[in-house]
Length: 293
View 1 (cartoon, one colour):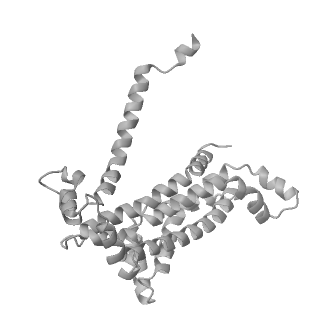
View 2 (cartoon, rainbow, N blue to C red):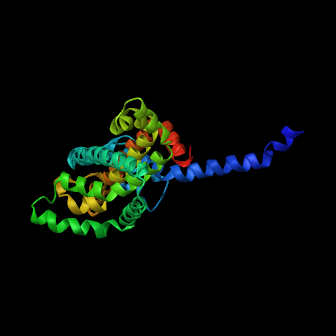
View 3 (cartoon, one colour):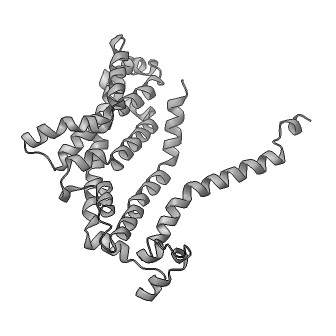
Protein backbone atom coordinates (compact mmCIF):
# COMPACT_ATOMS: atom_id res chain seq x y z
CA UNK A 1 0.00 0.00 0.00
CA UNK A 2 2.83 2.37 0.88
CA UNK A 3 4.58 1.82 -2.45
CA UNK A 4 1.34 2.51 -4.35
CA UNK A 5 0.73 5.66 -2.35
CA UNK A 6 4.24 6.91 -3.06
CA UNK A 7 4.25 6.07 -6.78
CA UNK A 8 3.82 8.93 -9.24
CA UNK A 9 0.44 9.01 -11.01
CA UNK A 10 0.57 7.99 -14.67
CA UNK A 11 -0.97 11.27 -15.80
CA UNK A 12 1.69 13.28 -14.00
CA UNK A 13 4.46 11.17 -15.55
CA UNK A 14 3.03 11.71 -19.04
CA UNK A 15 2.70 15.45 -18.44
CA UNK A 16 6.26 15.66 -17.08
CA UNK A 17 7.79 13.78 -20.02
CA UNK A 18 5.72 15.79 -22.51
CA UNK A 19 6.91 19.04 -20.93
CA UNK A 20 10.55 17.87 -21.04
CA UNK A 21 10.26 16.88 -24.70
CA UNK A 22 8.67 20.22 -25.62
CA UNK A 23 11.26 22.12 -23.62
CA UNK A 24 14.14 20.26 -25.27
CA UNK A 25 12.64 20.86 -28.71
CA UNK A 26 12.19 24.55 -28.00
CA UNK A 27 15.73 24.85 -26.63
CA UNK A 28 17.41 22.80 -29.35
CA UNK A 29 15.37 23.98 -32.33
CA UNK A 30 17.19 27.32 -32.93
CA UNK A 31 20.58 25.61 -33.07
CA UNK A 32 19.37 22.64 -35.15
CA UNK A 33 17.62 24.97 -37.59
CA UNK A 34 20.72 27.17 -37.89
CA UNK A 35 22.96 24.11 -38.35
CA UNK A 36 20.67 22.81 -41.10
CA UNK A 37 20.52 26.20 -42.80
CA UNK A 38 24.29 26.61 -42.77
CA UNK A 39 24.43 24.08 -45.62
CA UNK A 40 22.05 26.11 -47.83
CA UNK A 41 22.37 29.21 -49.92
CA UNK A 42 20.96 32.51 -48.70
CA UNK A 43 17.94 32.50 -51.04
CA UNK A 44 16.83 29.14 -49.62
CA UNK A 45 17.47 29.64 -45.93
CA UNK A 46 16.00 33.16 -45.88
CA UNK A 47 13.29 32.55 -48.47
CA UNK A 48 10.28 34.86 -48.00
CA UNK A 49 8.11 33.08 -50.57
CA UNK A 50 8.23 29.53 -49.22
CA UNK A 51 9.74 28.56 -45.88
CA UNK A 52 10.07 24.95 -47.00
CA UNK A 53 12.87 26.03 -49.35
CA UNK A 54 15.10 25.99 -46.26
CA UNK A 55 14.34 22.27 -45.94
CA UNK A 56 14.52 21.16 -49.54
CA UNK A 57 17.09 23.65 -50.88
CA UNK A 58 15.95 24.01 -54.52
CA UNK A 59 18.21 26.98 -55.23
CA UNK A 60 21.11 25.27 -53.47
CA UNK A 61 20.67 22.24 -55.68
CA UNK A 62 20.34 24.39 -58.80
CA UNK A 63 23.59 26.20 -57.96
CA UNK A 64 25.76 23.39 -56.60
CA UNK A 65 24.03 20.25 -57.89
CA UNK A 66 23.15 19.13 -54.37
CA UNK A 67 20.65 20.31 -51.70
CA UNK A 68 23.62 20.79 -49.37
CA UNK A 69 26.75 22.89 -49.77
CA UNK A 70 29.79 23.85 -47.74
CA UNK A 71 30.03 27.24 -49.44
CA UNK A 72 29.15 29.10 -46.24
CA UNK A 73 31.89 27.34 -44.27
CA UNK A 74 34.41 27.74 -47.07
CA UNK A 75 33.64 31.44 -47.34
CA UNK A 76 33.84 32.00 -43.58
CA UNK A 77 36.89 29.87 -42.77
CA UNK A 78 38.98 30.36 -45.91
CA UNK A 79 37.80 33.47 -47.73
CA UNK A 80 37.23 35.57 -44.59
CA UNK A 81 39.87 33.71 -42.52
CA UNK A 82 37.57 32.90 -39.63
CA UNK A 83 40.19 30.44 -38.40
CA UNK A 84 42.24 33.40 -37.17
CA UNK A 85 39.35 34.48 -34.94
CA UNK A 86 39.01 30.91 -33.64
CA UNK A 87 42.71 30.80 -32.79
CA UNK A 88 42.54 34.20 -31.10
CA UNK A 89 39.53 33.07 -29.08
CA UNK A 90 41.23 29.99 -27.71
CA UNK A 91 44.40 31.93 -26.90
CA UNK A 92 42.37 34.48 -24.95
CA UNK A 93 40.30 31.81 -23.18
CA UNK A 94 43.36 29.75 -22.24
CA UNK A 95 45.16 32.61 -20.54
CA UNK A 96 41.99 34.01 -18.97
CA UNK A 97 41.11 30.64 -17.43
CA UNK A 98 44.64 29.90 -16.22
CA UNK A 99 45.11 33.35 -14.69
CA UNK A 100 41.63 33.53 -13.18
CA UNK A 101 41.87 30.08 -11.60
CA UNK A 102 45.35 30.76 -10.19
CA UNK A 103 44.35 34.06 -8.60
CA UNK A 104 40.86 32.86 -7.65
CA UNK A 105 42.04 29.62 -6.07
CA UNK A 106 44.69 31.29 -3.93
CA UNK A 107 42.45 34.25 -3.06
CA UNK A 108 39.36 32.14 -2.39
CA UNK A 109 41.32 29.82 -0.10
CA UNK A 110 42.89 32.71 1.79
CA UNK A 111 39.54 34.46 2.28
CA UNK A 112 37.78 31.26 3.34
CA UNK A 113 40.41 30.61 6.02
CA UNK A 114 40.69 34.23 7.15
CA UNK A 115 39.19 35.19 10.47
CA UNK A 116 39.12 38.92 9.79
CA UNK A 117 35.80 40.74 9.45
CA UNK A 118 36.91 42.69 6.37
CA UNK A 119 36.77 39.45 4.32
CA UNK A 120 33.03 39.83 3.88
CA UNK A 121 33.36 43.43 2.69
CA UNK A 122 36.09 42.50 0.22
CA UNK A 123 33.74 39.96 -1.34
CA UNK A 124 30.89 42.48 -1.42
CA UNK A 125 33.09 45.07 -3.15
CA UNK A 126 34.18 42.45 -5.67
CA UNK A 127 30.54 41.55 -6.31
CA UNK A 128 29.65 45.22 -6.88
CA UNK A 129 32.35 45.54 -9.54
CA UNK A 130 31.13 42.34 -11.21
CA UNK A 131 27.57 43.68 -11.26
CA UNK A 132 28.54 46.88 -13.10
CA UNK A 133 27.85 46.94 -16.87
CA UNK A 134 30.95 45.83 -18.74
CA UNK A 135 30.83 48.78 -21.10
CA UNK A 136 31.36 51.18 -18.19
CA UNK A 137 34.46 49.26 -17.10
CA UNK A 138 35.94 48.84 -20.57
CA UNK A 139 35.87 52.61 -21.06
CA UNK A 140 38.46 52.90 -18.30
CA UNK A 141 40.88 50.70 -20.25
CA UNK A 142 40.66 52.62 -23.51
CA UNK A 143 42.69 55.72 -22.59
CA UNK A 144 45.61 53.81 -20.98
CA UNK A 145 45.58 51.35 -23.89
CA UNK A 146 45.92 54.18 -26.41
CA UNK A 147 48.43 56.11 -24.30
CA UNK A 148 50.69 53.07 -23.81
CA UNK A 149 50.18 51.90 -27.40
CA UNK A 150 48.78 48.51 -26.34
CA UNK A 151 45.31 48.83 -27.86
CA UNK A 152 44.27 46.10 -30.27
CA UNK A 153 46.48 43.27 -28.97
CA UNK A 154 45.41 40.10 -27.20
CA UNK A 155 47.21 40.67 -23.84
CA UNK A 156 45.21 43.87 -23.27
CA UNK A 157 41.91 42.04 -23.73
CA UNK A 158 43.14 39.17 -21.53
CA UNK A 159 44.03 41.54 -18.68
CA UNK A 160 40.66 43.28 -18.93
CA UNK A 161 38.71 40.00 -19.02
CA UNK A 162 40.60 38.63 -16.02
CA UNK A 163 39.98 41.83 -14.05
CA UNK A 164 36.25 41.84 -14.85
CA UNK A 165 35.62 38.12 -14.34
CA UNK A 166 37.87 37.66 -11.31
CA UNK A 167 35.16 38.64 -8.77
CA UNK A 168 32.91 35.87 -10.11
CA UNK A 169 35.75 33.33 -9.93
CA UNK A 170 36.68 34.50 -6.43
CA UNK A 171 33.11 34.22 -5.15
CA UNK A 172 32.57 30.78 -6.64
CA UNK A 173 35.84 29.29 -5.38
CA UNK A 174 35.39 30.93 -1.99
CA UNK A 175 32.06 29.11 -1.58
CA UNK A 176 33.70 25.79 -2.49
CA UNK A 177 36.53 26.30 0.01
CA UNK A 178 34.08 27.20 2.76
CA UNK A 179 32.43 23.80 2.33
CA UNK A 180 35.73 22.03 3.06
CA UNK A 181 36.25 21.53 6.82
CA UNK A 182 39.17 23.44 8.29
CA UNK A 183 40.08 20.26 10.15
CA UNK A 184 41.71 19.00 6.95
CA UNK A 185 44.18 21.89 7.03
CA UNK A 186 44.92 21.29 10.69
CA UNK A 187 45.45 17.56 10.17
CA UNK A 188 47.87 18.25 7.33
CA UNK A 189 49.81 20.69 9.51
CA UNK A 190 50.01 18.12 12.29
CA UNK A 191 51.57 15.75 9.76
CA UNK A 192 54.26 18.34 9.01
CA UNK A 193 52.83 20.26 6.06
CA UNK A 194 53.14 23.98 5.70
CA UNK A 195 50.04 26.06 4.95
CA UNK A 196 50.79 26.04 1.21
CA UNK A 197 51.55 22.31 1.21
CA UNK A 198 48.25 21.63 2.95
CA UNK A 199 46.52 23.73 0.32
CA UNK A 200 48.29 22.05 -2.60
CA UNK A 201 48.29 18.40 -1.54
CA UNK A 202 45.16 18.14 0.60
CA UNK A 203 42.63 20.87 -0.17
CA UNK A 204 42.95 21.24 -3.96
CA UNK A 205 42.48 17.51 -4.71
CA UNK A 206 39.33 17.51 -2.57
CA UNK A 207 37.76 20.45 -4.39
CA UNK A 208 39.03 19.59 -7.90
CA UNK A 209 35.45 19.30 -9.28
CA UNK A 210 34.83 22.83 -8.05
CA UNK A 211 37.95 24.09 -9.81
CA UNK A 212 36.84 22.45 -13.08
CA UNK A 213 33.34 23.93 -12.74
CA UNK A 214 34.70 27.40 -12.06
CA UNK A 215 37.19 27.07 -14.90
CA UNK A 216 34.42 26.10 -17.30
CA UNK A 217 32.30 29.11 -16.34
CA UNK A 218 35.34 31.37 -16.62
CA UNK A 219 35.99 29.90 -20.07
CA UNK A 220 32.41 30.58 -21.14
CA UNK A 221 32.55 34.18 -19.91
CA UNK A 222 35.65 34.82 -22.02
CA UNK A 223 34.44 32.72 -24.97
CA UNK A 224 31.12 34.53 -25.28
CA UNK A 225 32.42 38.02 -24.55
CA UNK A 226 31.58 40.75 -27.04
CA UNK A 227 31.96 44.12 -25.29
CA UNK A 228 35.57 43.76 -24.14
CA UNK A 229 36.93 42.03 -27.22
CA UNK A 230 35.14 44.28 -29.70
CA UNK A 231 36.36 47.49 -27.99
CA UNK A 232 39.91 46.46 -27.11
CA UNK A 233 40.95 44.32 -30.08
CA UNK A 234 41.84 45.40 -33.60
CA UNK A 235 40.27 43.85 -36.66
CA UNK A 236 43.21 41.51 -37.22
CA UNK A 237 42.99 40.22 -33.64
CA UNK A 238 39.23 39.72 -33.44
CA UNK A 239 37.81 36.81 -31.51
CA UNK A 240 34.87 34.78 -32.80
CA UNK A 241 31.93 36.77 -31.45
CA UNK A 242 33.05 40.16 -32.84
CA UNK A 243 33.94 38.43 -36.12
CA UNK A 244 30.42 37.01 -36.40
CA UNK A 245 28.99 40.45 -35.66
CA UNK A 246 31.17 41.85 -38.44
CA UNK A 247 29.70 39.29 -40.85
CA UNK A 248 26.19 40.33 -39.85
CA UNK A 249 27.10 43.98 -40.24
CA UNK A 250 28.01 43.46 -43.88
CA UNK A 251 24.92 41.60 -45.04
CA UNK A 252 24.58 43.94 -48.00
CA UNK A 253 27.31 41.80 -49.60
CA UNK A 254 25.78 38.65 -51.08
CA UNK A 255 26.77 35.52 -49.19
CA UNK A 256 28.08 37.28 -46.09
CA UNK A 257 25.01 36.37 -44.07
CA UNK A 258 25.65 32.68 -44.78
CA UNK A 259 29.22 33.19 -43.64
CA UNK A 260 27.74 34.42 -40.36
CA UNK A 261 25.43 31.39 -40.12
CA UNK A 262 28.32 29.00 -40.72
CA UNK A 263 30.45 30.89 -38.19
CA UNK A 264 27.68 30.71 -35.57
CA UNK A 265 27.48 26.93 -35.93
CA UNK A 266 31.28 26.67 -35.81
CA UNK A 267 31.37 28.71 -32.60
CA UNK A 268 28.59 26.67 -30.96
CA UNK A 269 30.00 23.18 -31.56
CA UNK A 270 33.01 23.49 -29.18
CA UNK A 271 30.68 24.49 -26.34
CA UNK A 272 28.57 21.36 -26.81
CA UNK A 273 31.68 19.18 -26.88
CA UNK A 274 33.15 20.88 -23.80
CA UNK A 275 29.98 20.49 -21.75
CA UNK A 276 29.57 16.84 -22.78
CA UNK A 277 33.18 16.04 -21.83
CA UNK A 278 32.98 17.69 -18.40
CA UNK A 279 29.33 17.10 -17.52
CA UNK A 280 30.14 14.81 -14.57
CA UNK A 281 32.65 17.25 -13.10
CA UNK A 282 30.20 20.12 -13.58
CA UNK A 283 27.40 18.29 -11.75
CA UNK A 284 29.64 17.13 -8.92
CA UNK A 285 31.21 20.58 -8.63
CA UNK A 286 27.87 22.38 -8.46
CA UNK A 287 26.59 19.83 -5.95
CA UNK A 288 29.70 20.29 -3.81
CA UNK A 289 29.24 24.04 -3.88
CA UNK A 290 25.55 23.85 -2.97
CA UNK A 291 25.76 21.45 -0.02
CA UNK A 292 27.46 22.39 3.20
CA UNK A 293 29.64 19.72 4.70
